[in-house]
Structures are given as structure tokens and as C-alpha cells.
Length: 459
Image (cartoon, rainbow, N blue to C red; front, side):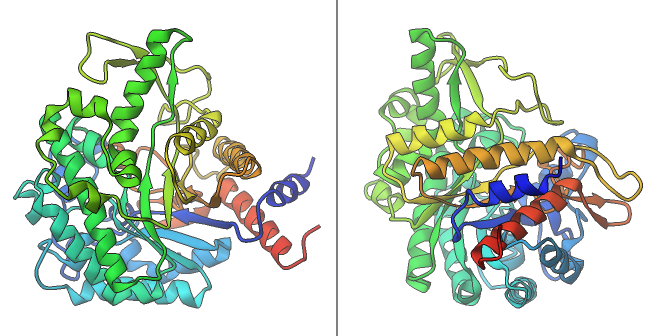
């Protein structure tokens, strides 16, 4: 059976104004780590430490996007993507985190934005996707309250210089990963394993978002602005009351510490009671600063978090529960499309929130090139199944405005190095050759069908 009718029927399920795009992040694709005035970030330092990243891989070269910008822009145009979500590298703009701007860094992003505009691709910018300038890390990084003010200054500078060519901007990408993977689990930069550090980073990160929103509004009051979260889709191991309570605690700890301050101006009571390192960080007026109105938020979803009650564990007193679905991506994550609708229903049932985009969704499928093609059928099925859930959410009345596949191309996957491939375009890291995968051709067809409906050419 031809997949064409299936693509047409899926495309028809999305409103004409719905935006389809792909996403990347600066450290994961740019390379050119020491070129044109850029100085190191915490990920440059972390990746060069022995034993931190699989294979000892670093982002020194990555996809060499910095030097292949025009070709990569042409690739986006060839795919027919409507919007491109990218991040701006703080250490390219302000190599020391503060102080004088690096004009050559601005030149790169100026060329990127002009290139997107010329090709009719919307620009969705992220101000911070984990590459904190190393100079700020020396003063405590995200555990140091002053980093929030430095970030706001950086945000204002970017808005003044580049904001006129953006379609949207977000402050931070995935505070959960920044805080918990970087400061509690130690598997991401800066590699700390401390609840006290994590709680300090929770509050500085929230404060940075609020202060940056104020800076964005001051420079570009009409630019749609928000934040991107990767909320945990927390599911209980059983129907027991104990596991139900474990889910509540896990939601407070993993989601509430970010969603509460941003959308309600308050931290969850359970976290304040059980994590004293957080409470003493909060100064008068802080929560009012964090609780800025935002125009939209971004949702990154890959896999659910299944938990069981574990009263002997530190707060939130939960243990990981086994996967329910047997299917997994190549990174080992359970494939559960229902987790996407589960987390959306939970969050909109709990908080008053504006419209949202799915800003990342995708699968590690390490299928290689054979005879010039990549038959990544697992990824294609993953994207298709999750897009059906996205369409269901729209049918249910949730204000979903767009979907961004992670990622445009295979790239540096943080602690996994180059071992996991998330791209709809294959990258040969030896030659930097790009090959559109089967999933990329499918996504291109879906976007084309959707555009055809917009212009009245659809079936």
C-alpha cells in the first residue's frame, strides 16, 4: 500500500496555521569551538574530561555547521521545513559571559537569520541550550545567583541585535536537564552530584528565566516569547495508593519546581518542606520575577517516567519502575506515545498555561547508510505515532501550535557522544556528508501535503 494516502490523511488532521519544523542546538552541531572569538563553555570543559562522555567525544567539530551554514540552510529548504528551532551559543556572543560583545559571533547568527529569511523559514531561537561560558562556571555557574543577571544582560543584548529577525524566542531549554542531570546526577556538565547544588541551580535557573523575560519584553515587546520544558510524564508502577502518592511527589520534584514558579509564582509545598536547600535561596520578590506572563511554552517529549513508591529513598521517595512497552529506541528509551498525551493532560489540568509547541520529539535510530539510503523505519514509525497523538490533542482542544522533530541531523548527543543518531538527516562525521533518511523524506512529504492543504491544493 502506498504511504501517500496515509500522509495526506495525517496532514489533514492539523490546522492550516500549524507549524512543522526541525530542531538543533549550538554545541551539538556547530563545531568551530575556538573559532571567531568563541571561548569555552562548560560542555567544552566537561567533554574534554576523561571518562565523562562515551568514546571521549567532544563538540570541537560536531557537524561543522558553523563552516557549512549555507549548505545546511539549502538542506532545510530542500526538506521544505517551515520553521527551524536553533540555539544561540552564549560563549560566541559574550565569550566571558559578560562584558563586551563578540562581533564575529553576531555575524554568524546574522547570516543564519538572513539565510532563513531568504528561504522563507521561520526562526525559532533558544537563548540557552546548556553551553554556559566557562568564566561564569568559575563563579559557581547556575548555583550562583548572579548568573541569572548575567543571562538577562545576554538576553537583552541578543534581542537588541537579532530580535528583529526572529519569529519566536525562548529563554531556556530543559531546565530539568540543566539542574538535575548537571548538578544532582552528575552525568551532564558541570558534573556535580549534590542536592544542595541542584536546589541552588533550580532557583537560579527559574530566576534567570524571569529576568530574561523582562529583558526580552524591554527590547522586543511584540516578539512571542516563552520557555522550553521537558516535563516528566510520570506514570505509576501499579494501581496502589502508595504508588499514586509517589507519582504526586515525583511530579512536584521533577515538574512542579519549574512549572509552579513560572505559571503560579510558587514552589510546591512538598519540595520546600523536604528540600531545605531550596527555601533559603528565595529572596523577597524572586517569585514575582519568575512569574512573568509568557506567550507560549515548548514541550520536549521522548519517553515516560515510570515510578514506584520507595519510602527509604531521599525525596521524592520514588524508584524507577520497569518499562511497560517492549519497544525501545536505540538509546534504550521506552517507546510510549501515550506518554505525550498523558503529560499534556496532567499539566493543563494542574496549571493555567498558554498555547504550546512540541519543540522536540524524536528517536535514536542508529540505522546506517546502505547504497546511498538510510531505511530508519523505527524512527519513521515513532514520528508518525507521536504526530497522531499530537493531532488527537488538538482534537481534544489543547492549544498545540506546532511540532519540531528532533533533530534536523545526527549530532553530538551530550554524554552519549556520537554513539546515538537522532537526525532525520544522516551525518558521516568523517566526511561531513549529509544524507536525507527515509524518515526525512517522509517528514518532507508530510510538510508538503500540509502546505498543499493550506493553498487549497490538497486532496
